[in-house]
Amino acid sequence: MSKQLRVAVGPIHERVERRTVVVALILLFTIVTFSVLSLMSGPMDLGVADVLNAVAGAGEATTEKVVQTVRLPRAITAVAVGMALGASGCIFQSISRNALGSPDIIGFTTGGATGAVIQIVYFNAGGPATSAAAVCAGVITAAVVYWLARADGQTGGYRLVLVGIGVSAFVGALNTLVLARGNIDLAVKARIWLSGSLNARTWDDAYLSALAVIIIIPILIACARSLDVVEMGDEQATQLGARPERIRQIAMFASVILTSAAVATAGPIAFVALASPQLAARLTRGSRVQVVCSALTGAALLLASDLVSVNLPVTIAMPVGLTTGLLGGIYLLWLLTRTKGV
Image 1 (tube, rainbow, N blue to C red):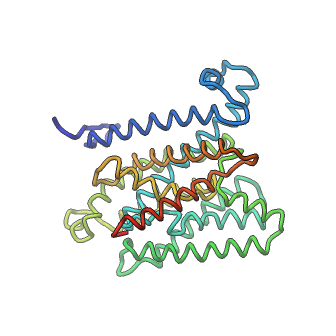
Image 2 (cartoon, one colour):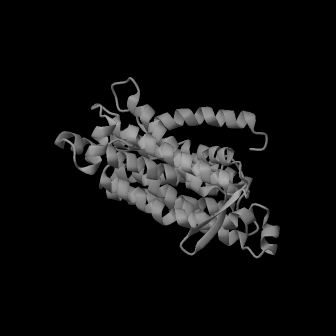
Image 3 (cartoon, one colour):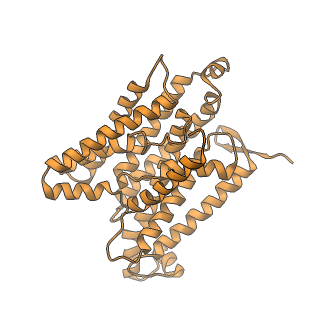
């Protein structure tokens, strides 16, 4: 029996390994399960029936208000942001050919956060302006990293990671300087945003992140087919008719927009973009660029981290960014100690 399935979405026809399809279905089931648990969790404990009735608009007024205006936007935002980070992390790790080549390591997440911090501390023009500033700053940071990492007309590899780490350190220091010299009340507000949180997410946040995922991820899936060839080496890819640098430019630009949208929605959230592609690759055991499974893994990870944050026995609302940061530190140490060719 063939180990591949033929998948058709409109005019796009693709052969996918059976194991990848099974893993994707399991991840989808996990996401649905975690989403339901997320809707049930909080100061007001709800049952499965209460949640389903509230989502359908057939529950009690109080329950409907809690689910539809607080918990459902939060869950949708978590899924969309997790997918955005997982997919973009997969692309950057493919381009850099390095497990550390994720947006939070090479500076794009921190760069997006810089725009938001400057907007909050100096202008404080509200949520939409903060989101726009984060997206613009993320694109500018990516352009700087790309320009500095470009050598002999090419990017990618260790140079991209090292340049990104240097730019990340610079913009991180800039963030600290802005916070230190700004209005103390606004600086506190910016620090809270920098922790990365899904608290108080609204339907506007859910729509923004979901729209970015719906538009950008299909582009990344199309790029992944070419990146499979580019990973064999630029010379061989060129011989096969591919244009490696053009492919990297398109994939990087789309991934930066996706990452910036995630940062604009929930703040800088560590670990998800770093770990999701690695976990997806281990689950699928495939050699291809696993954009879809990485995105689904990212959504499952962020939902799981949010559930941990909500259910911790503390009296304060734990930002999910702190939870993912703690988990990410442990995972990064494990990755560095177990992987010889990071």
